[in-house]
Length: 166
Figure 1 (spheres, one colour):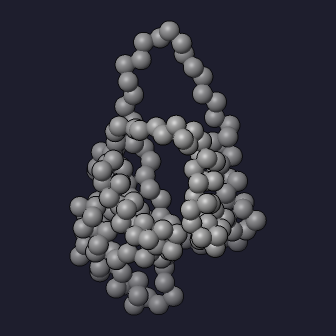
Figure 2: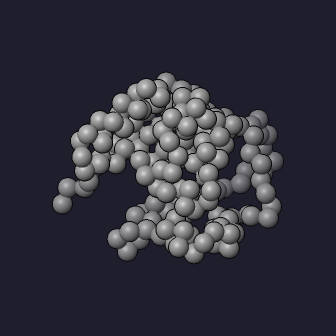
């Protein structure tokens, strides 16, 4: 996996600020925000904030291998593109753009149930490698229809969401 570093955006905050200027305010707030007083946003980033990179100077570096096998497929990195509902609201055709990028970089792409692209189109773009995140619909018949479409489109991984037990 070849990583290209754009010096105009040295940090995630720089990318976030660029996105804030480029997309409509309501869409940015939807994408950037978190529910329940941002508790999960904090949890998702707290451990990353504790990571400290230690440089090792004057040591020979022979390269890094980030390849990871998940569900029988070897990916070039141990991360992928997470599902975001209503991606097309944030940027036109974004599910398709991200699906193509995932294939190009050999990383997982997870399609949200609340997508603005079809199951079939994303399967086509990802050469049948897309994963699918299922929010269980209120009606079982809708769930059954989604599952039939996923099977017909050869989705290899189904990501199930469950409600927390209180």
